[in-house]
Image (cartoon, rainbow over all chains, first blue to last red; front, side, top):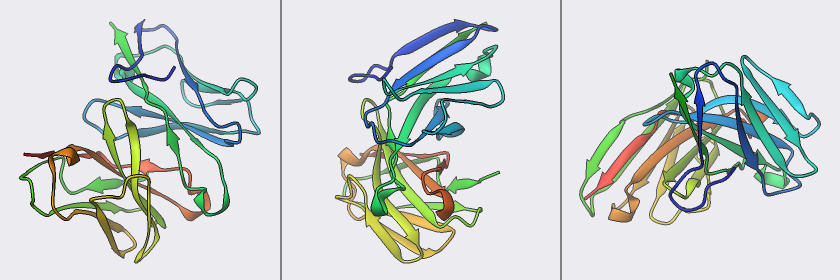
Length: 115
Length: 113
């Protein structure tokens, strides 16, 4: 979920387990969503995206699920590895006139993978 | 692969100094963005450029200006740095056909003393 204040929600998993990271988005008109991974001291890295005409999209070891009814997005990581440890955050976009470049970002979830 | 590079990973400046942060992308993207990232506040858009010499204010443009003289390069300028501009600065780019799909650089961590 989203963070409040300075402390990010944290998810701790064992290596090899599956991880599920959740995101509640704000705008029912949003029609495009991205998941980013940000390792400590680095810039956000694009993982996967999904448009609102889909409810599921799969990548390599990752799956994004979209539930528009409850405005909820999730990122599933299969067989989580230590290299997956990072902050993950979602971003939403709603195209409206000349502002369809704008992304609204969530605060993120810290994923820690224990060996 | 999309490559967005930023001129410095770390910078330390003094209050009142003029600061230039440079960003270069090699994918011929039309759009370029500058964000700052602060704990608890997430990413906030400072400025956006959709073409050479074109710019639009983002959500927090105060205290900043930008320059886009070439398509591949987008500069963020702090005219007179202040301590509240200590932050992580992130540059991103996206193609015109998919403006919303933004790719980020590694970031510049700026400390203003």
